[in-house]
Length: 144
Image 1 (cartoon, rainbow, N blue to C red):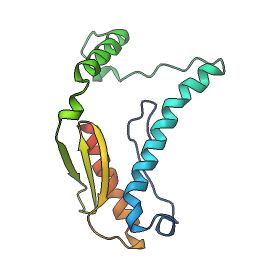
Image 2: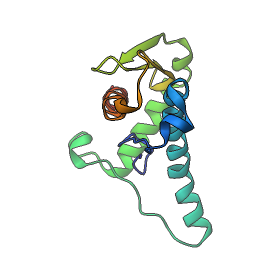
Image 3: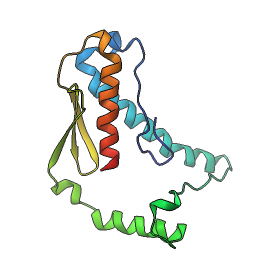
Image 4: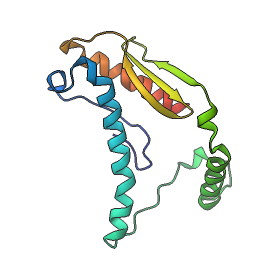
């Protein structure tokens, strides 16, 4: 799950993940699910506009922007920051973010997850521990 801006909210696995993905494919499968959710979040406003609906603007909470800054000014400032940061991701080094349980690892460049891997071979009973580790690692990327 992602929010309307495509930011990570939560992730899950169906009970059949072991037979569908296996331990070799689960890390890539989780990232693929996240990418798919982000794509869907990006498509919703376009589909609504095409159908004649005006999507509601997504706003950051008031505490997330400088005091007195209007929504429009905040959007312009965000766009300026994105432009200023353009291309920096290619020059940045890859960071490693491990889940606290030592099962899941992310390779991140800038704010983009490049790949994921498992640090230990899970068994079918590790689903909850694996998900908790993946959630923590993905949430940490979002906070950074």
